[in-house]
Length: 116
Length: 178
Image 1: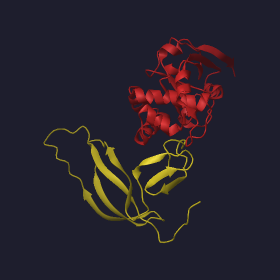
Image 2 (image 1 turned 135 degrees about the horizontal axis):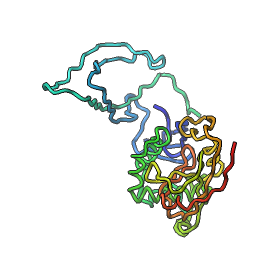
Image 3 (image 1 turned 30 degrees about the vertical axis):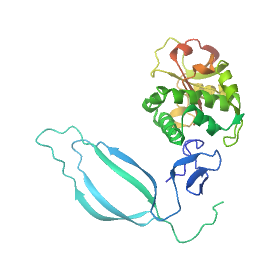
């Protein structure tokens, strides 16, 4: 998650954000994120919907992966499942994959202090 | 009584979620030149008013502090009838009669930025100076009232959106050859 401030970050510049109680606030402009944030294991940082539109001749697989070490960004392939859309005999122009996602945070044991 | 930037945003009828919506729309415009989301902003009177207020805050008041009360709301309302100048730069020959690609004209509040886009037309796409293919460039200036601004956001540059009708009154300010 890139710590962006939608008010004062310009083209992806990182922002200095601080959690005050349950509010995530930009130190520069005072923007308060509308969601509640807490430094707790498994806290949902963001959620949304991803849409993909692969062409009809695309071979699709569902890859289930596990992030073993977040710091090294290594992923282990756990299982691969073929996706078999039901076409009902009609020629397919394209598919639409719509998936809901959420990003949760898990912390290391080491305490970083105030972060300032 | 003075109010803060955020209190003014609330007075316009917007909240933090709307600021995120606005950011995403302008980000898509700047990074992919997709105008659909920003057009949605232009159909919402609150976002249109926010654009005028942002211009007042940035370019007229030249304020930086968004947390503390520095704004007299009545002064902002009165300034809506003030004349402002928008600039636009491009390569080739300036023709205000040309049909624009979008149902608005993207201009800027800064003469220097307009000059940069005139000399380097690809600057918005790549954000790196690229050699101009044409040998002539121009910068035009357009005068309009603050209340006539359709949209304004200081994200990658100080971009103002105005109507084609206002752009037709633009006058060439700089025209020269490389």
